Length: 491
Image 1 (cartoon, one colour):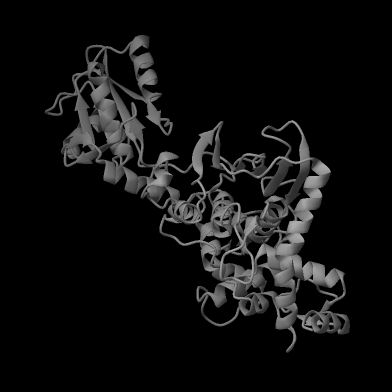
Image 2: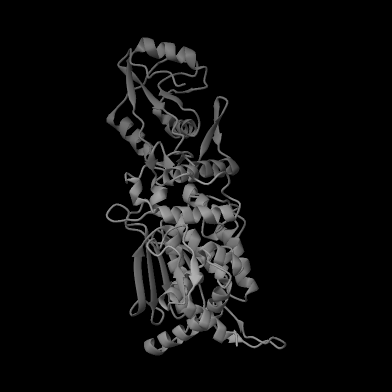
């Protein structure tokens, strides 16, 4: 505990006797300012302390002359801290018209590590030393998991604004991966509590990001912007979409947009009866980057969003905010720390089987690209945003012909999945998770969602609970029309 700030000479004398050099730092004058503020930095990174100017090493308070220049020097030195700090300067008169200056430094655990003039310091016994890099990185990771974050603050929305069916759908996925044990949740509040997105009876902001129903006007940042541009700049749109929704649905929409606009070249391999399709970007690699954009972005930026931009010569994924502290664009191509800006949101994606927690996501993306003969992505920070760029040839086409070609490619790509989905429903109704499992998928992909919608629109399948289309208990069964189509396709 830091002793109380002294208000007179008697209290100061008592304080100096009790210090024993562990929570106190004595300086004879502000001429030793730089060294004193290095110690201040160490106190900030530890359990706090008091820095005293005008006190001899033996604890005798001799004071010093304090002028406006002295106070300006202290104020300027204070500006060299990162993150910024506000430490009150306590002035205590002593005989001879002099003063002792005291800086009461309180530990600020949620903000460490602090640096002074770009360096971090720590306390070792009664001395101050530069903090080792390993300790600095550890404290950075702890800061990312601190108690006060945007995602773990109350959302100030009623629980009716949380999509019950979406929450239970994700919980069912998590259970399928063995990452959500115990008995089934009794109700939505119980489920949110167990997922860690409801606390003390209040819905957290993370719950809105993951399962929200309404995002305006309070949560405009839960947004996805997608565009296919003609050429290599942003002069002309070929397609453009902008939507808000819960994170998992935004992921589905981004994957569908990629499928609609990525060409799907095919080649004939000797000895194979079917064409082998070469994806422009490996599907799992693209999904990993999109997931990272959703879970690592800075949600404190109300006007921010995740953006997907497709050009003729590249694909860019932007997310609001720079990379988390301790992570650089260069480090993402090497072995690096796993630093999560939004650990609650990341945990739900982990439970749903979409990420791992070992800081290898970007390394896996690079490996998948190299295995597929695709150039690995470039990681950058540009104007306050994290950007991932795949340098691939999407193609140069006339808008109408381009659109028709993409539609044809998409139909070809989904055709096989459509017939397989119908075949899987031959023996009875299935939910999307069960259907995904029957098709050999880990989870309900964007392609599967699109196939289900198309089959519903064509009347080939129907919902078992038609009045609640988003119910977690929803199943899909084949209609007589679907049976006829399946029978004809098998002849």
